[in-house]
Image (cartoon, rainbow, N blue to C red; front, side):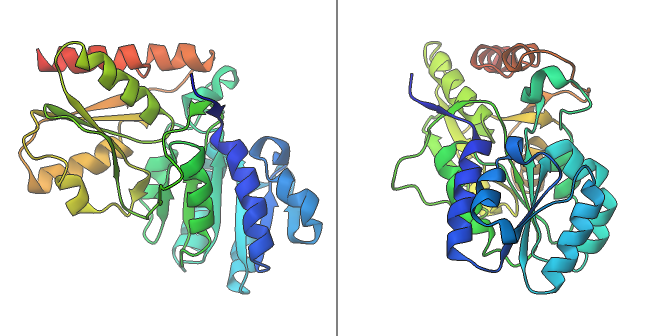
Length: 310
């Protein structure tokens, strides 16, 4: 097995790299800087790092003020606290004026694990995707996380970058170039197409290999940018496909599955099934136990696809 990486860990190093390039970058945290890895930046640039304590709403409001003054703030906390607790501040003070505040939601999804439903974010993509002016990015591996972090600083408006603590293998080589809104085909196939986002993209690839043993050829497409998403690039993956599947570590309502469904419903005639958390809260468990329960391990994805096709 190849080396595994947590996207939140790679983010910390990329943030430090970004701070060395840009002197207008400031970083804010809500007393989780060791877990979000913003500590890496804070130790090198203490005059451009602020820990506001467990006060996420103040964190976002402060970031909005700093952005209005010409700086580029990176706000760090667990995904559920940053998007859920601060929704009004994000909507009114950041998204409405389209300020360049970067919201970094760490420890996202089911794989926050034993902390249970209160700490697991299964609605964060939906919340952020619904806001005008907001860019939503969910990297799949360490290479994409680094590039997305660096690219986020050049996006004019607000960004939500979703990160996880689940170890995932490297999917991209040294020639990979992250582009906002552009999906990436990772595996070709002629029967079905699987759109996946985040660390479960690796699970989708593993499921495609299992399906190959049953003579089902699956194309796998990584969707790192949930919004904006290049509509024509999505439709270009559908020619000749029997079925479309989406895989995400998120509620099937409002996330990747909804995004792809909306594009297809307006332009194509291909049946689609969304694989993810089926409109329920999480619970305590290990990351792998929870992924298995919700059918997001490779075998679970394979089973759902075969059941749908037969």
